[in-house]
Length: 110
View 1 (cartoon, rainbow, N blue to C red):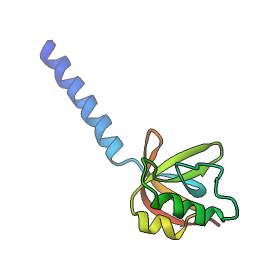
View 2: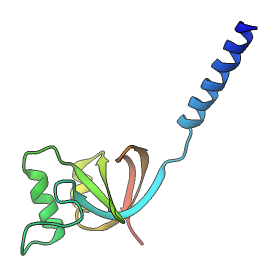
View 3: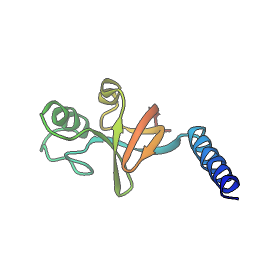
View 4: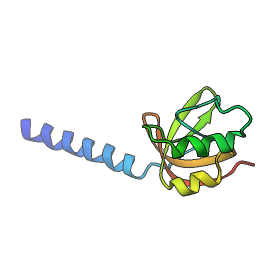
């Protein structure tokens, strides 16, 4: 009986892990920022894009981010690509872990 239960449990766990591996990426639409400034940029007289790029050149623990409503997500991926769309509204597709989006695709928002 114990062996049968162990096998069934192992199959259930395997099925759950397999379903997660084939899960479709989530899609978010928001504005590319840096996680230091977040929703409100602090450099007077500079555009949001310029402030984002400037902050990313400073040393710190921040990353490119995506403002979606009241949330700010960290973007993991190609920083050069994120720099080209800094300050712009984009649609991002990727896998989410906590507050980090592992970006698979980023396109200008329609």
